[in-house]
Length: 313
Image (cartoon, rainbow, N blue to C red; front, side, top):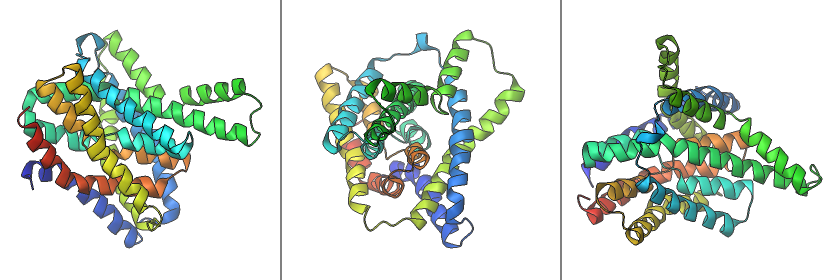
């Protein structure tokens, strides 16, 4: 087993296990999970998103490898929706199949394997990863919610369904800090230290807190009916997703370190932010939390193979 992969994945697995232990010792009750989830979703996540986006200068970014990456994401996402039907649960699965743990695992892994050249490509992706996937995921979720509500008689027509979905997608704790940070970045005014430091501390807390919540939720989850679906997500995320990206990259002529970096990112396990989405919408929480843990463990075996197949780049 590749020691580089173990080094990158071990902290993530450890924090999830600690979360399971905390729940087993009843330090966090099942009734408290929703409150902790709200803290992460409404406070820590917006802080990280805003602070990430204020460092993005769109004119300085090379979007060629990123465009190929999101082409593969779109193919996997759309295929998942078509396979499972358009609903909130298929939206959750589609997001899990495509949303990589780019920060907690991606940064240390790419740094160790491809160095600064790889990190430049990764940071370019990270700068818009949340903008595209989290905003896109929000829109898809809200359309699915509005569509299901329409079937139940809560909305009278397609126009009403569209207006509800668009309003809920815009007035949402994910897109607002993303677009606010992006706009602020283009203005070019440094963020005052007294504002930046609290945002930095809250953003740093997001990753560990999300993973602890994954562990706590796993401890209280009924996994017997969700394991097959969770394993399916883990396989799609860590094996099928990178395979589709590599096919797209070769067809479109993307080579070198940018291609290898994006292939590794596509092969990363499911990001914990997907779990925050499922808790917010009260859908597939057990399934997604299990898929995060399983995909992380699966990467211990899949990533060394992918690294070997890619070679140095």
